[in-house]
Length: 397
Ligand SMILES: [Zn+2]
Image (cartoon, rainbow, N blue to C red; front, side, top):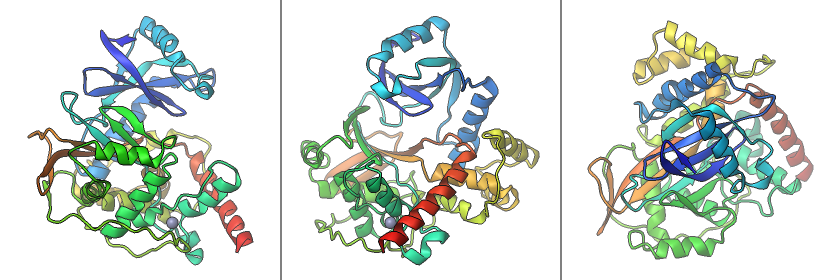
């Protein structure tokens, strides 16, 4: 398989995209799936890319951390790709095998550089606060949803991960959250080595320990948890020095209640992500329009008219104060479902900040993926699920 003369490799896919990496480069291409019903025109694709580039990325980072671009593939490339990819794609996904000629080029977030050794932990943290509707149950959306997933046989075991631990700012609870994700990753945690998935829900936790032990840069799982925790608490651009490694964790599995207490440093990445997630609390959803993605166009248009550039703090506040709460709820929905990518490379590079613990020093990069706009329907779906969760929980207790 090749695109523009470079060999390609199948990486991953979701409902809308197939992601392929272009070997010997630092980028990936998201092929857009098409079937008779969901032909996406150029305007929708352009709006989606602009939403990622000029709304989500500056809101999360305060600067343009990266940019996605639209590229056009030749019909021969598309035909060849869909044929070559067919056999490597999961069977249940092959129902959609046509791709748009337009595709999205984005940086490969699983690597720091293709010239070095790279480890990347992907965490899909989900909703990191207790939504108002669940306060009286002392359970967060994620933990309640686990009960539903178990009942519907979507998962074999309930995860002990609670997003409120990850977003607590309390190092011990954060380490516990990451460890619980490693023990039962579902679709919330993956580990990549040089762009290849080496650990996911199909793996055994022993595999994770082996990978870490065999890597001189981490040595122990304990040190790995320290590194990830400190990066999540950092601003993403400064060098980090950890004075002392933490004591080994003893996880107590008592998860009766989700713990709402927490305090994140104001300039840290998780804090910005959490603030975006909380934007949904401003919306009182009564009815929504049927035009699934029209809001993306409207939001971008409003921003242009108001001359809003989200790398400026004043403009970010202006957006939160003036824009339709429905659009804010849609930004929040994306922030609740995005994935954090924490990359580490033992080859230190001047292009990236470093993290140091005693004689261990690595380059790191933190970025976010899955920032494409969601359909308005996801809000109604969420409301229905909330109702189901409450009924299920009340029946149980
Ligand atoms: Zn919880």
